[in-house]
Structures are given as structure tokens and as C-alpha cells.
Length: 79
Picture (cartoon, rainbow, N blue to C red):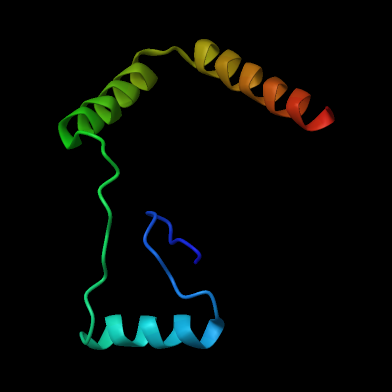
């Protein structure tokens, strides 16, 4: 059975999926979400840290980091 973006189970066929979406939209069914096992407080702190690091970097450092990331992506595609 296919899984949704957060790992929830979805019907495999198109009509079954459409019926499920319609039932969720009309309130006949509740959408079920599985816990990803991560601590919400840790996720929030991680997001804060990333934003703080991005603000601290100079334009040149940010550009260099982006250049390195692009080189790694292109190297991975060529293999």
C-alpha cells in the first residue's frame, strides 16, 4: 500500500484514493498521522540553529557553500 508524505497509508488505486480524500474532506474520516519518532523540541531547535547560521554567514561564505553543494550534486549525477 502506498504511503503519504508523512508515512500514512493510502489506497493503491485511484478511485479508492479519491474516495478516501472525499471522506476526509467531508469529515466522515479522520486523517491519521504516524509519529515520526523525533522530539518536537529538538526539531524546533534545529530549525532555529539553521536560520541563525544562515544569518551569521557573510555573502561570500554563503556563496561558497552553495557552490560546493552544487558541485557535489553535479558530481553525483555524472556517476
